[in-house]
Image 1 (spheres, rainbow, N blue to C red):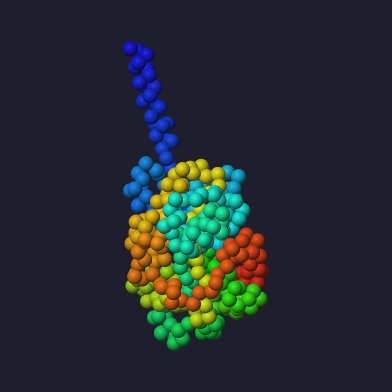
Image 2: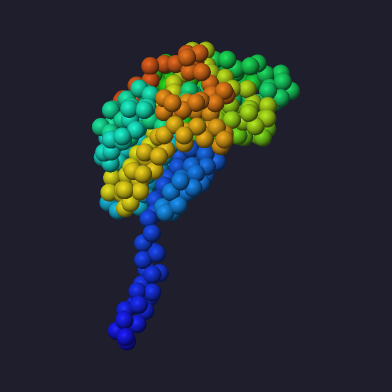
Length: 341
């Protein structure tokens, strides 16, 4: 009897230690924080046995963190943010190979992202690059509606434009890569140096510029169009625009980290978030991107990519680590260094 009592006591004593080993998932989310929190909340409802530790970071910051943690990964899954840094991480084998059973349910552009990366990443949403401008500010200052990239060089816009820093923001890197593909590299950098005269601030987050414009702190923010639409839907005087010359687009992506401490939980989240039911919830969080699941119903506010003049964005080249380093180094030397002048 004493032995039985001792065994029971030992079992009870071990419960806290067992509970500490409960399943968990370490997630970095590179979308708007409201969307990130929505995903975590819904996943918790569907999988209450898995505790999610979520950190919101821009895609450029996440890429840098994943590289820094390569020898001792602390992150399991990276969701959202532009596809270029996901492809760069894949090229460096910082992310794990995983062929989700959900792939047949996805649009071709989402599957192509997986194919380019050797199944180390996948497309979760898509959206075009553009800007949103504050109609009240433009009207009060007598400024012309900016319909083209060239219009952003108007001297009247001095101090009115915000765009993110491409070192930290995938949105801004997509802008940089878009202009290089649209104009040619030398011409694009000449354009960016001229644009710098009108830029009031280079933000860390890609969506921050249009949020500043919505608050009246700037006249215009260069962002993905869905971020401008989100501010408009919330009732701010923001008009979304895409440039007449043409523009790039993103394939927001998702990757499991190579050597992740919780790979099984990462795969559960990965497959879950690719379902139509989950993607149908995104507009509730102000997400107006085009969902990757073919059965998901896009919000009525989602910009129609078929009506936008899109360039043939080369994800393979501009998602390459070496190309990224070259463009960012040149931006730092010729544009970023002038930001404080």
